[in-house]
Each structure stands twice: as C-alpha cells, then as structure tokens.
Amino acid sequence: MNFMDRVIARSMPLWEAAASEPFVTAMGEGNLSRELFYGYIVQDSIYLRDYLKAYAMAIFKSRTLREMQVFYSALGFVNDSENATRLGYLADAGLTDAEVESIPKRKACADYTRFLVETAEREEIPEILMAVMPCMLGYRYVFEELEKRYPAVLDGYFGPLVRDYTGEGYAAACKTWTDYCEEVCAPLSAERKERLAGIFEEASRHELYFWRMAGDSHETE
Image (cartoon, rainbow, N blue to C red; front, side, top):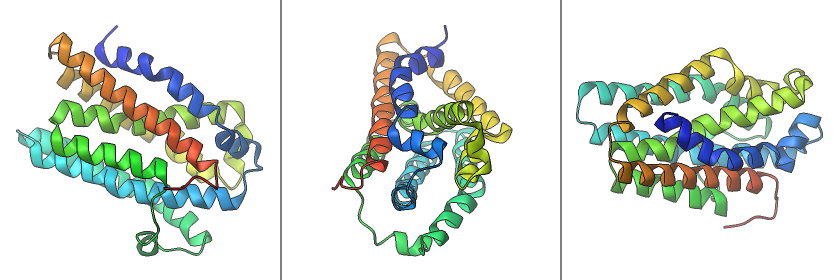
C-alpha cells in the first residue's frame, strides 16, 4: 500500500461519518431546508477564500517552476468548476460573493480556515498538501456516496452541486493531485510521513465538523 492509500485509509472513518451526517442525508432525500443549505453555501464561500490562500502560500514557497504551475492550476480549477454553481446558489439566497465577505465565520469554519492558513504559513509543501487535500478528496467521497444512496438527487435542486464533485473531470483532478502528493511525499522519512498523515487526518476531522456545522443552525463562533 502506497503512502496516499495509507493516509486515506486512516482518515476514511471520518469521511464515512461525514457522508452519513443528517445534513447530507437530508440533501439526498430532498427535504433539506433551504435555510440550512444557504447557510452552508455561505460558510463554504467564506472557507474558499482561505482555502485559496493556502494554495497561494504554496506557490510562494515553491522551489521549482513545476511546483508553482501545479499549485497555480488549482486556483483556476476552483474558480472554473465550483464558482458558477456556488454563485448561482448565493443568488438564490439573495446574496452576492462580495456580500458574503461581511458575514462572520461560524466556529467550525473559523477553526478549519485557521488550521489551513497557519499550516500554509508555518509549514513546507508536503505539509500544505496534506492540509488541503482532504477537502478535495473528502468532498468527492461524500458526494459520490450521496449519489449512490440517492440517485434522484441529481434531478433535484441540489443536483448541480453534486455533479460538480462526482463528474469525470473532478475525478481526474483528484487522481492527478493524489498522484502528485504520492510523488512529493513518498521519498520522505518514515517520521515525517507519520506527521504528514496526522495533518491529513486533522484536516479530515475539520471536514467532518464542517458538515456537522452545516446541519446545525445554532452553531456559532
């Protein structure tokens, strides 16, 4: 089993728990309230700003042109593939992307983004990769499980969001980034790999708490 297979397997219980969260289940069953959903979209939009900052910091810390190009490609991918759907839902909620900037972060979002930014500022490329990857890979797992359990979700209001993370293009991007992580991390010492796996697991735990926050309209900073 290679390095990325091991770190993913270690965090899989957290992803499985996320895929079974009431918020996700309600989305699949089609009875998720628009209030909760829009609250999630708002916090996800806020989160995305700091997620992109982590990639920007990785560009700054890159040692080769290839590294810079790899991380730069992620900035465009997020904007192109996720932005249109997210902005559409924000518009349904009567909000613009600019207006979201004045909305406070809820606790799970604040904790997660603080972890991302502090890791990106303090650590090197392998550690930054382990901090950002659970968002990309975990979302794919959660939404693929959602589609398997509730295929009709694709025909409903939440269908565009689900398709963003279950399509062939997103799967290909996940594989590309997983392979890159393997290339970067595999040659490192066993001690550092263990630490990297811990960062990946911590990020996955933040992912789970983010989903729990989405289902709790009373969760606060």
